[in-house]
Image (cartoon, rainbow, N blue to C red):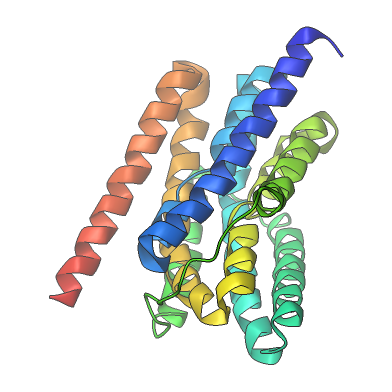
Length: 268
């Protein structure tokens, strides 16, 4: 391994670990409702966009990030599957967490296989994503939007466990991108490699009730990630990486701010 390859590897580990630890801390400090909004911002999409651009080139990265939009649509059933599993296996808590992760992952695999066969382009992918995210948000509208919990102490081992799933997945996807191609690389990037571990950790530590606000807000936030990916797919080649990241993130933040304003107005 050359020195540049080692630097890229260490950067992947640091960025991925930082995201999952930061999001979990945000949920614990801000509460499930605001923390879920933080978690519903682009994370793996940013990581993959950066490293696909560096390692595979802008054209590959732009094509890949486009296919992350249907990949995000495949992420939505992960949370529905997790919710269903917690109701099917409410206790003991460890078994409930395992069932949630297993059914959520199977839901992603099945949905991704179906979505990979649907012909989508820039004209159809956004309405499709809006229908999936909006329809799911309506389905889970009766879930509570917040939950009370007492923070539990953390340890270095717990922090390492929180970060490991994200790091392993990102390393696997980015390292095999040249084999997978841009379409499957993008679809796989949709997997909630940070969101699912965060939800499982919170479930294990505090109980299934803490996951419900997370599940309720995620479809709304997922559409913002779709907008991020759409802007990135259009702008990456003509504008370059840094301006694209700034513009795409600005669009997503503007969308989340608008949604937050609507939610506050509804509650008044």
